[in-house]
Structures are given as C-alpha cells and as structure tokens.
Amino acid sequence: MIEIRNLTKKYGQFTALDNVSFDVKKGEIMGFLGPNGAGKSTTMNILTGYMPCTSGTVKVGGFEIMENPKEVKKQIGYLPEIPPLYVDMTVEEYLKFIFELKSVPLSQRKRQMDDILYLVKIGDMKKRLVKNLSKGYKQRVGFAQALVGNPPVLVLDEPTVGLDPGQIVEIRRLISSLRHDHTIILSTHILSEVNAVCSSVVMINRGKIAASGSVSEFTASEGSVNKFVVSVVGNKSTIQKTISDVSGVRNVTFMRVDKDASLFTVESAKNVDIRRPMFNELARASLPIIELRPVGRSMEEIFIDIVNNDKAADNAGGKE
Image 1: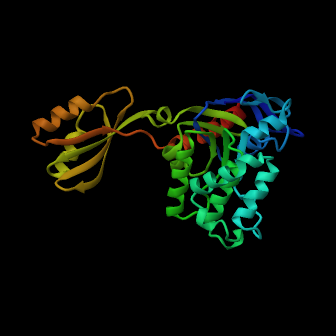
Image 2 (image 1 turned 120 degrees about the vertical axis):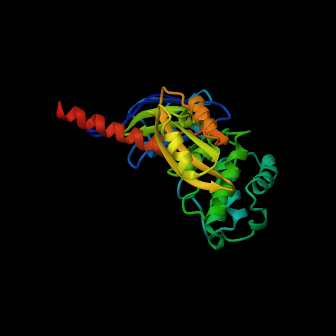
Image 3 (image 1 turned 45 degrees about the horizontal axis):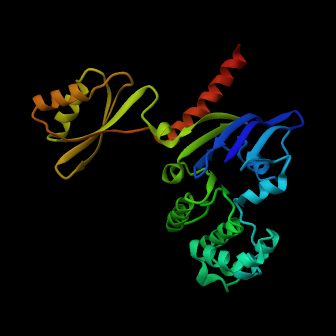
C-alpha cells in the first residue's frame, strides 16, 4: 500500500533523511519509532505531501507523490500531534467544513458523517463547541477529520500524547478497530503502545533506518541472553541457589511470591538451553515447577540498544 524508496531530504549541508526505504502492507498497523530529531516528522511530512523530498520516491496506492500529489493526498487521512481543530465551531460544523475541503460528494456526506460519529463515539457531542471539549474528545474529533472521505491510509502522529490512562485505552481500541479498513502508520514515543496495537515496526535513527520487522520478531528473546520466568513451590533461598548452580545460568532474580510459589527471572547464555537441566535439578531437590515460560525483550530495551549501538559505532569511527 505504501512504498518508500531511497527517500532523502537535505537542508543545506544537513541530511535529515538518508536513503530511507520501507513498505507498509495493506491492512497493517506500522509503528514508526525513533528518538527526537531522528527523521520521523520529516518522513511523515513528505508522505502526506506537506514538503518535497530531495530525492527518492514515495508511492501510496500505486500513485507517486511527486507525479500525482492530489491522488496521493486523497489516499491519506492525517492526524498530526496537535489536531487541526477550529475551536469556535461545533463538532458537526467542523466536520462539515472538512467534508467541503476534501470535496466528498454531497450524496455520501450524511452517511459518512453518521458512520464517523459512531465509530469515534462523539455523536452525543456533535452540537458542542470544540473548545468546550476535553482533550480526549478533541483527539477523537481529530480522528474524525482524518477519517473523512474514507481514506485507505491513516498517518497518526503521537495520537495519545497528553491523554489520561482511560483515554489512552479508548484511543488504542479505536486504532485497533480501524485496521480492518485502513493501513496505518503510527508514530509514537510510547513504546508499549507499539506492542499493544502494531503488527510491524520501523525504527529510524539519525535519518537512517536502524531496524525493521514484525513486532513478534522484535520482541522475541534476542541479544546475548535468553530470559525465562519460572514459578517454583518451596523455600525461596533454596530455589534460588538450586537454579543458580545449574550450568549455563547467568543470573537469577527473585520477583515475588504468588500464592505458595516463588517467581524468578532466570537468564542464560543465548545459545544455552537451560530448561531441561533446570527442571532436573529442581526435581531432585523436590521443588516442583508450576510455570516456566520464555520472556522476550521489551520494545524499550530494543530501542535503547539500537540508539546506543549507533552512538558507539559513531564514537568508534571517530577514533580511527
């Protein structure tokens, strides 16, 4: 649905984007991650037709942004970090204005209006002035304007920033519900949000793609260790010593007592499978295992590793 190839953007001597390439498949929710200044906003501004690129191509639904900018814009609904609202209008007046801007045929407007108000759950607010709405409802109105015209692609920039926990849950549910009819790019600093709603991830750092793949591939246990959570019945100190003595175990950390079982996090070398020897040693000590499961790395850990590795590579290069 979205094809970005060798996208480069320069501001004088500064390169904000350096040969960025990635695809987003139809029906996918892609998490677009990166630290401040990484190039996320520049990429989204080019994708939505707000600014031109220096070189490279962007295609949306088969249309190239430089050759067919109007067709590409028809394909995209954009929710920027600060929703573009006219606060002295009612919700209904504002959305009618957006229908006019997007040249939606008159015959489709009432049906689309009703569907959008229902989908984002603001039907009971349509007569209210936008300025009198809570931040959560304003964000929903922002979503509503992005959905006008039923664009197949949605670009969402930090859609839950500043919302309370309840509002965040509701917005995430809304995003998840949209995957059936829309391809979505979600830019966010809340990395747990990626785990909650995204199917794939592209990480950008210093204007280059640092990593990409499915969420399951990212959060699989990687790096230099395997990590497990084990729940065992018995004396906490005895359990910890027994596990620590198993060959290949690097670290054992007590987590908590859950009913009559103690939970530990166990780390081993990446290429060493400690599950069977750990089971055998605990069985010999009459310490029954209630649960044993692998734990993948968090998105936060992966993100920090990528950023730090880039910094380390730069430092090493500077010393040569």
